[in-house]
Image (cartoon, rainbow, N blue to C red; front, side, top):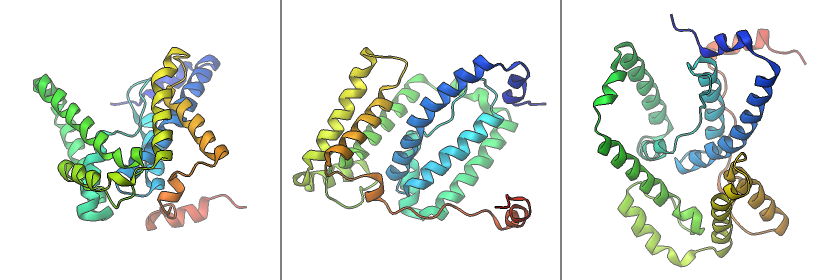
Length: 246
């Protein structure tokens, strides 16, 4: 019977391990949560959906995972898939696709099809990864340059054509902040390898934009947040009976 690693780990857990896990959790969380928001926006959904998804998925992976050092977080490769589904079928279609994917994964796990991965050619994996990298890179050109345009098309060649038509709307402020962030990420490992460069870039550029009053688009100004998802109807009664009494 499968026993989550969390159960066996807690048997000999000590204060030093807790301190190490706390430090790692804070650093990973600070980097992963803004990344989840960015991936949500790139996928065509509102920012809080990425935040909620990262929290729920991270908790389930940590509670039910089979590795002591496993980290759950947003995956860039799914941006392309999710964006196409949302644009064509909406959030309802994305929900259905997610449920179907979960059922398929469970079925493949029960059938022990994980070993089939060893037959997949390495060039196929390399080509797929490289292709995803190019598509993700192309999807971020709008925000990197601060272009004033509508929704970015899902097709790669349509993206390039849309960027060409709107290249005259480049924002020097957005481009400057983007280049500064990229420079920090590239050079920071020379200063300190324990703290991720993405974390330093996030803090430094956010503080710079706020203190200097630089006119760039932010998560709050680019998307209108909606209310958090409510509990399913079957759970509302239990929550009302067992929730805190303020």
